[in-house]
Every structure is written in C-alpha cells, then in structure tokens.
Image (cartoon, rainbow, N blue to C red; front, side, top):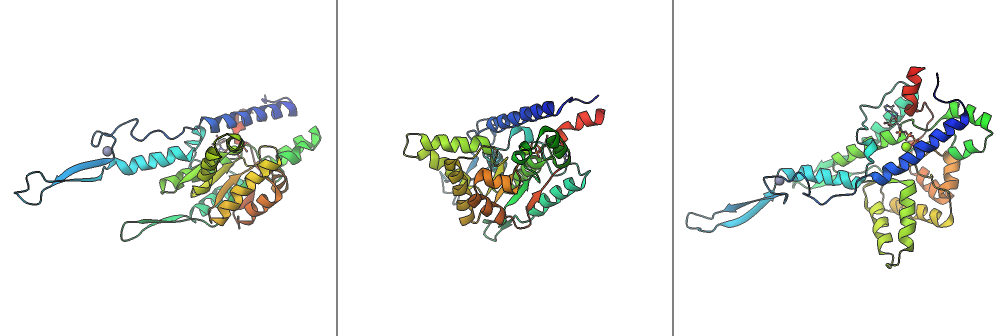
Length: 307
Ligand SMILES: Nc1ncnc2c1ncn2[C@@H]1O[C@H](COP(=O)(O)OP(=O)(O)OP(=O)(O)O)[C@@H](O)[C@H]1O
Ligand SMILES: [Mg+2]
Ligand SMILES: [Zn+2]
C-alpha cells in the first residue's frame, strides 16, 4: 500500500517538509562562549598554557611565558563549526554517506567533490596559513522549478513532478557535507537559509539603531570565506528583497568570494524570484558548477522500499 492517495496529499506533505526545514535553520545553534562546556583541565578553558623560563640559576622569579594549549586547535574548529550554522538535521550529512545509485546522484556528488578541490590551505614556512578559494559559485537547481510546476493543472503537475522532481534529492545534504569539510580545513563558512536570512535582514533594516544590526548581519554574509545559501529563491519577490539579493551577490562577487547555493527553482523562475541582475551574476560566476538536477525524493525511501 502506498502512503499517498492523491496529488493533493503529496503536495500537503511536501509543504509540511518545507515548514520543517525552515524550523531546522532557525534551530541551528548559535556560537557559544568559548570554554563554556567541556572545559579543558590543562588550561581551564583559557586555551593557553603558562610556564616559566629561568635565565640562569640566579634567576629567582623567572619570566612567564604562554603557549597555545593542545585543545586550542580543536576548539577553534568547534567554534568555526558552530558559527557556520550548519542545521542540526545535517550534522551527519557527509560525502561518503551519500548514495550513488542513480546517474544524477553520481553527477551531483562528483560536482561537489570537484568543487571542493578548488579549495586548499597552504602553510607557509613561517607557519602562516594561506587559503585558496574557488573563484566559482556552485549551484544545484531544478530543471523545472516549483513556481513553474504550480502553474500547471494538477494532472500535468503530478506527471511533471514524477519526471522532474527536485525535492529531497540531496542538494542540501551535499552542500552541508561540503560546508563541514571546508570548516574542517580551516575556512570560515556561513550557512544561511533563504527564508530566515532575508527576513532577518529586512527586520534589521527596519530596526531603530542606525542600521547597526543590519550592517552586522550583512557583514557576516560578506565576510565569510564561503557563503552557503540553502533554498535560495524560496521567499516571494519584492523590490526591497531583490535589492538585498543583489547587494549580497554583487558584493561577494566584487570581493572574489564564492556563493554555494541550491534551489527548488529553475534558471528562469529563480531569476524572477531574486531579480534578473542578481541571478545573472550568480549563474554567470558558476562556470561548470551549475547543475539542473531532478531525481527521486530520498525522503520517501522508506515508503518506496515497502511497496
Ligand atoms: N543520495 C543520498 N544518499 C543518502 N541520503 C540522502 C541522499 N539524498 C538525500 N538524502 C537524505 O534525504 C533527505 C533529503 O535530502 P536533502 O534535504 O538534502 O534534499 P534537498 O534536495 O535539499 O530537498 P529540498 O529541495 O526539499 O530541500 C536528507 O535527510 C538527506 O540526508
Ligand atoms: Mg534542501
Ligand atoms: Zn586546554
């Protein structure tokens, strides 16, 4: 017996998942104060170990020196991970637990792995680390977008959904796996969910604080080495939103910093959602890293295997 009796039930279920997803992003944990939990007994959370150096045997008091505690690198990684805002739901998403039973899953995986290779960290002789970024954006989008599907009558929509489904195909899974790998390698990554991010920016813009909170938020999106924009184009378009999209896309372009994004919209419907100027820059900077993907919804896998 299948789980769904009608197209309407499928649509209602999908909407439920979309709502759930929004909550996941809001749930993602904010950075905690360093050393708040699991304090290291060696340094009591200071991340520095103090020791004395004596000049000679007559040096009674010695001089205090400090060196980074061995917990420091691990904590730095944890901080970067927490501040990257990877949603809790995807902490287990990895490249090596992504099934590749179909061609499109293979392609999506391959593209993510290739893109990852555009990044590297080089340690110079003096110990300084130099990071090399990709100059390209990386997008996983739909062949037939959500908005385009909605315009169809229910019968055609159901047919089209079967042929060109874009939900649950692993876009976020792969890009969160990418985020985690980059964080581990030392990059500052910021994951934002379209709905909450744009709303937060719009709210901050209205706040009566000389735009302080707005610029702070904007700055975090511009400063990150890699910005991962989950579900871009989810919110409906308005002019102020369009300007916001353009500002972020264009500013990151000017700073030569990449945007990794995924969307349930296709090229043209995404352009309508975020504005043509922003979309043209977003896509234009993808090079070969733009994939229009359709496939099976992995959220239904348990149902499918019971049929
Ligand atoms: N190839 C795969 N192997 C293993 N798990 C997968 C695969 N594809 C998707 N999943 C899992 O299925 C669920 C849905 O995937 P995900 O959220 O990445 O899809 P999506 O394409 O981002 O969908 P949406 O557009 O609805 O956001 C996740 O729990 C994800 O880990
Ligand atoms: Mg997703
Ligand atoms: Zn320590």
